[in-house]
Structures are given as structure tokens and as C-alpha cells.
Image (tube, each protein chain N blue to C red):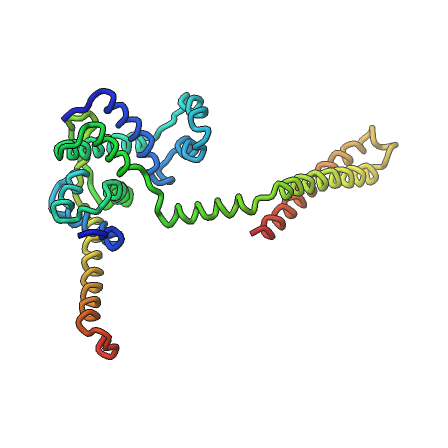
Length: 190
Length: 113
């Protein structure tokens, strides 16, 4: 039994959307994962993403599978007396992805906890720590390099090299300290 | 029988593997088979997801054949890994059902368990 053009298009649309939900994350391309995660802005970025390779072979195959599966189911329902519209409504309701796996429940819970515990002040503090350590490292490193390199008199000769090395090392130390502080804050919030 | 879905969750994979072991079959045909057997409460989405899982875990061989509806239709058969999984399922089932039967027949007599 074939469906009207409108229904066939709706089946295709439904299958395209839902089949990707059934695919485990491991089987998705990066673009598909991105699409799934960015539900709210999906339509906006879809336009951009469609320029790239947006769908894996597995994704396309899953969509084809679902089209056939849904069509079979709808045909079965229609043979029992349902109209095409009723069959589509029932099939789409039954086949709509319901995320009930333990893994997804766990993920949902963790996301929820993350957003509940999320405090903008923490991010501000982390940023300030990074900035503070960076400037501190730059200052101390640069000054140490400047002084050990012979000070003002030797600066334009070869002293600037020591100053630059000192500043570079200072920046690296500053970033390292920033990361340690970030880790401490993250562990405290756990 | 109503409200079987909760109890079937753990065994549906074994049931579907057994159905596939009987011969080449496609997705919705399995649903029809289950319905004929009286498993009417199983959501169609559950079987679809299960088939994807069997495929991903490489428990089935797949043959694609042209369909009248456009995309090629997938027909499933069990491979060696699937057969092993099925045997393991039946071994577990035998163990479980025998224990449950003992429990049922002996009632609350702890010493005879």
C-alpha cells in the first residue's frame, strides 16, 4: 500500500529526525552529535552544517530502516481499518524515541546536577585566577630575566633575551597555577 | 496478557534472537510474529531499537533486498556470535525458570531451596 505524497514526506521527516535519536552516540558523526545536543538552535545551525558532510552512512541507513519499519507498521494499522492520518499519528507516537536507558537517565541526572550547581561566580573567579596568575608570572618572570640579564645597561645588548625568556617562563607558570586553581575549584564543587 | 512489558524488558532480546534463528526475517515481520504469539503490549519502538542494538553488537547478518517502498529492506539472520548469545540466553532462562519453579512449588520452605 502506498501513501499520499504528503504523508510520505511526513514519514521521511519523522524518520530523519527520530532515527538519529535511536543511533547510539558512538555511531554518530561529530556533526550529528552536535545537531542532537543543540536542540534549541537546531534549525539555525542545520543550515550551516548542511554545507559540510552532515550525515554518516549509518545515519542514512537508520533513516531508511525507519521509513520502511514505519511504513510497514502504518500499512498494518490501515489494514485494521485506520485512516492514513490515524495510522501516521499512532505510528509516530509509538516510534518516537523515548530515552529510558540507564545511561541516558544517568546523563540527564548529571546534566541536571551540573546546571543546578552551576554558579557564574565560580567562572568569574576562575577567570580572575587565570588572569591574576598570568600577570603575576609575566611580571615576576620578566623582572627576574631583566635583572639576571644585566638590568637596564645590558637590556639592548643581550639582556632582552633573558627578559623575554623570563617573561615566557612566567606566563607558563602563571597558566599552570591557573589550571591548578581551576582543578581545585572543580573538585570542591563535585 | 496485559502489562508484560516490564517483565519482558530483560528477555526480549532473547525472544527476538530466537525468532531470527528460525530463518531470514525483516524488522516489522518480527513485530507481527510477536503479536501473533500474544506479545501485543510490546511497543513497536522497542523492537526497532532492539534490532539496531543487535546490529551494532554484530549478533546478526544482514541481507539487503529491494523493497517496493523505496529503500532496500534489511533481512536478518543469526551469525555465530548471535547463536552463542542465544544459547547463553536459554541457559540463563533455564536456570532462572527452574529456580522460580522451585520457589513456587516449595512456597516459603527455605530449607528446601
